[in-house]
Image 1 (cartoon, helix red, strand yellow):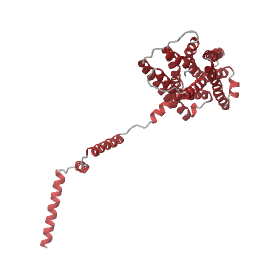
Image 2 (cartoon, one colour; image 1 turned 90 degrees about the vertical axis):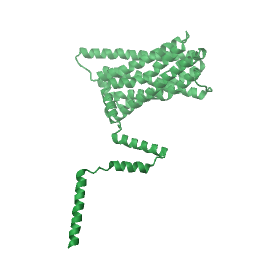
Image 3 (cartoon, rainbow, N blue to C red; image 1 turned 135 degrees about the vertical axis):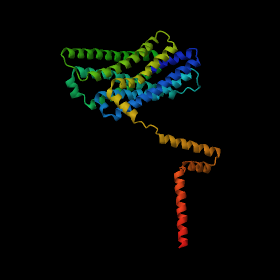
Image 4 (tube, helix red, strand yellow; image 1 turned 180 degrees about the vertical axis):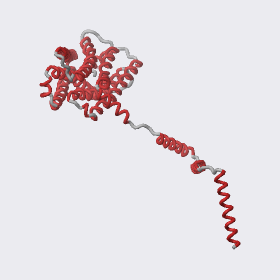
Length: 353
C-alpha cells in the first residue's frame, strides 16, 4: 500500500540516481509477483467471505472492506506503479502522460488510505466491544458497520484530495500533512491496543472469559501487521524532508508496504478456522481430470497428428477393429466344424428320402 508521497520522493531520487537496468528488472519482477499474489489472495478471500454464511459476521465486515481495498491496490495501483518504475529504470520508453500519472495518484492514495483507516476502525470497534459488551450488542447493528464502511471511503477520498492538492503545490507541505495524519492514526491504534489489553486483564481478574477474545486477537493481529508495514513508509517520508534517501531503500519500503495486502489473506487462513475450512472445501471441490478425459484427449491428439501427416485413417480404424475382435479358440473352431458336419449329414438324409 504505497503512498503517493513516497512515490514522489521515489521518482525524484530515481531521476538523480545512476540507473541499472538489471536492478530495474529485479524490482519490477518482485513487484509483478506481489501484484499477482495480492490479486489471487484477495479475490479468493472475498469469494470465501461471500459464499460462507458463517464468515459474514458483523465483526468481519471491516475485514472484508480491507480485502476489497487491498484488491484494488493489487489490480490497479500496483500495475501503474510498476509501469512508472520500469520507465524510470529505462526498461521501456514512454511519453509523459499526465492523465495516467493522476490516475495512479488517485487510485493509490484513495485505496491505501481506505486500508489504513479500516485498520484503525477495527481496534476502535474491538475496544468498544471488550469495554462495553452490552452496549456494543445493542448499538452495533449491521447498518452501523455499513455506515462505518461508507465513512471509511468518504474519509479516504477527502484525505486523498487534500494530499494530492498540496503535493502539486509543495512537496514539503504534503509530507508534513500526511505524516501528521499517519502518526495520529498510529496513536489511536496504540491507545486502543492498550485499552483492549486492560479490558482483558480486568476480565481475567473477575474470572470471566469474554467470547470475543479469539476474534478480537485475530483482528488485532491483522491491524498490527498493517501498522508494521506502514511504519517504514512514515519514517522514510519524514526523513526525506531532511536527508536524501537511497532509491533502493525507497523501493524496498514500497515493496514492504504493498506486500501487506498479500499478508492479510494468509493471516485469515491461519487465524480464522471457518475461513480455513472453507478454503480447503473449495480446493476439494475443484474438478480433477479423469482417466476417460485423458483417454479422449489422447485420441484427439492422435487424430490431429493423423490429419497433419495425411495418414490413411481408414486403414488405422480397420486395424483397430481387427485387434478389438476376440480371436477364436480351438473349442469354438471345433464346435463350428462339428455343426457344419451335422448340417451336411442332415442334408444327405433329406436327399435320400
